[in-house]
Amino acid sequence: MTRLSLKLPGPAKRAPELPRNHDDMNGLLMAGLTDPGRLREQNEDNIAYVPQAGLAVVADGMGGHKAGEVASKLAVDVITRHIIGTLSGAGTNSDSQLESKAVSDAIQLANRSIFELAQQQPDYAGMGSTVVVAVFHDDKLCVGHVGDSRLYRFHHGILEQITQDHSVVQELVNRGLATAEEARVAVNKNLVTRALGVDAAVIPDISEEIVSDEDIFLLCSDGLNDVLADGDIELMLTEHQRHLDTAAKQMVDIANERGGPDNISVILVRANRGFKPNQAELRKLRDSA
Image 1 (cartoon, rainbow, N blue to C red):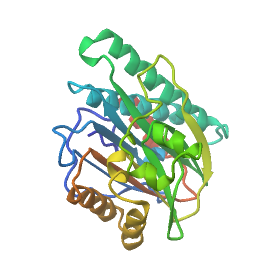
Image 2 (image 1 turned 90 degrees about the vertical axis):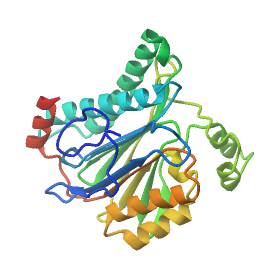
Image 3 (image 1 turned 120 degrees about the vertical axis):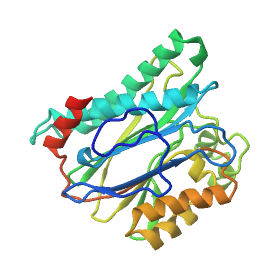
């Protein structure tokens, strides 16, 4: 796992059993946790969250011989460094499109980095990763994603999926050939139609959302939402919305109790419409990279 609060990621480390909330002076609260699950020998997920930058990233790697772990860690590292570097030089009067461009450029840069490494190292041939990236700024959220890692919003007690999977079953749902519930239990539900590192170029989906104070956003790998239905997640956030660390741990624990068939990653963020990146901290992070 790669986890960020005050410094950029170094060597991957296993998450602590109980994560701790991390919050910026402006009140943006984050908590994250990643776990290998019950059936996988290694964790090919990687996460990062940087409250000072309003940044959260979840990546789910794929490929044999630890290549999935390599791909997801490279994705998280490249994306995090690029976005922090961009935001740290923006100042207080940045272009309204800065965050969207930074997220798009970072995802494409990560794709190119994974693709080139796979071409150079035979052991990494065919590796790839999904990714979902969230950047909070003022009263907005920029989200970018490739693959089936997801972003949800918990607003006034209701959970809503914001991203739409790049997957075979989602295409069937879009064409009216399957229902959302049928897609949840489909045999081929994990077949993605888009991923980082598979081709030399990739097109991420980028969107911007308006946030409300106290909205909670969930970034996760499919190891969570394949096991927990939206209603399950909604109930946990309703019960633990004031304690994001507890909510994150409960999600992972229950996913494991139900079999834990895949790696499980969760990042929870409580929104704040007045959030602005901490420029001094961003420059420290940039310079220490």
